[in-house]
Image (cartoon, rainbow, N blue to C red):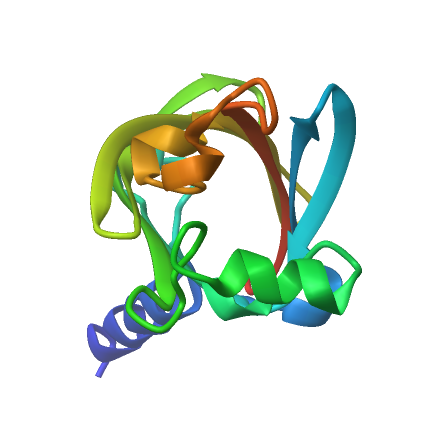
Length: 178
């Protein structure tokens, strides 16, 4: 009996230190910015999900998976949103989701991490590194991408003098249980 109590305490401790976290969508945001004819434009995605399994003491063992509903894109004008859902842009009928799956997490400072992984949009996959700051259950950061690497705005829209190739994706993801 005296050996059972320490074993139970260790088991309970192991259960309570599980590091899976739950996304709080109402406290999170995913925005992107680019320039159209030299003018800054900002849009957002209204629907996305993230799975996070992370221990700040062992970041290299962490895993992150992120999914974006491309049909939830918004530039604040229904006609623009409809255009973005079309084939030259996100082609949401054939490519409804964008995904990011981590392949490694490296600490770069107090509460700062580089998350390497694969970003897939419209069937194109690229290796990227996403710098993240983690504080008070919120993961935040920004990552630049090239839209044409993912066939976003191809065809007549591939002219980068009209819509720039550089897009910055910014996020603030609030998690409970982190």
